[in-house]
Length: 59
Image 1: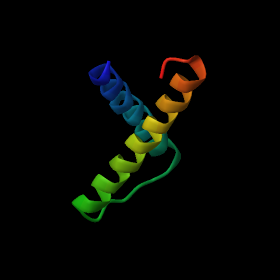
Image 2: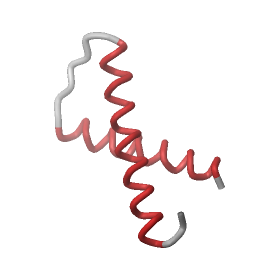
Image 3: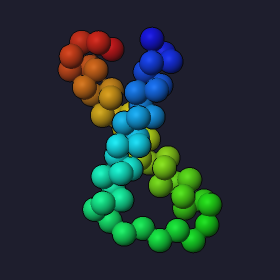
Image 4: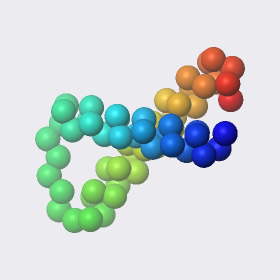
């Protein structure tokens, strides 16, 4: 269950990142900015997965 949840969070982070890239033009100046952008996208994806899982009674 934990591995499936981790994979789901990463997949949702990738979806959030693709939506974010379509809405905003991002210019990266260093690896730190790339890492920070991916971190926040995966964090938002985790929040979405948590809220949906909680609403459905799965978590």
